Image (tube, rainbow, N blue to C red; front, top):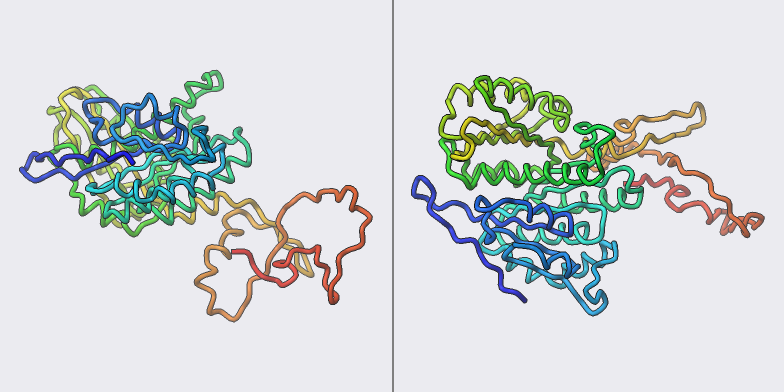
Length: 411
């Protein structure tokens, strides 16, 4: 086992130690995003990579490299199977926990839908929490063109990560098309998704690790995220010139990644990270924050942080992360369901179809029972068994799924 290089606590601008932060890239996509974080802002001592593929770790500049391996894999990776990666991560749980030791915040980065990150990220998040750190995951969901299998694996992994981490910042890759045109090359599209996720990591890093006139206390961030288990929407924008604060506020409120401001309307809490040179004025801070507050009226709490960087003279950079109820993501992921009764067939929209599932725990004490509808699945021919008689036992057709025969609603 490789001994992890722990981040040393350097004094902050007010004499107090800065919180120890560790950033882990998991899998090939996560490792690439972490490797793209520039020095010296991100010293290699705070970076780590975890993978089942030895070749993916070879070129990394991270100080902590954890290769999850056994004789079965022979250094070739998980073969796209998240379960293999999960089992390996559980076997090396002590190593993962030791790599997180001493950190107050662990940022986890990965692309879901493949084998490595989908299986490792939930376990690594649990290891980080057991080591006493706040675990915040930044994940990419696959493009629609990558197929149903990757989409299903990604959604299953996202659910597991939500159960393990303190917060999840989720970027559906498909949304990147809102920022590009049809002539954009494939490589540029994938780089754009990595860049957006990287900016989300950078924004949180700046908020809690870099000195600023409005620093964010790690205790506030922990209190905000520790019980939320929410899905987050985020966006990054920058502007320069005499009207930079107005331009920046307009860009962020119209940003496609925030759904033209709708994500702010529905936000439970909002993190605002500003970065500028020493020419930043309080009027500019007020103008940007006020515009975001106007759209975030339902937010219970907003945390604002500023970071100073001499290299940003004349520029104003803004990262906004807004929490959204995790149930919204579930509703959007569920297709319309056709429910049939003795009278008239009814087709429920995704949000309506999701409600019985989302409220099942609350309605356990209710005497009324939910009725399981038929899922919209295509009928497949039975081939050589097409003329076979049904399998009957005590008057029941065993070819019909048990949950449907017994009227049990799926959770």
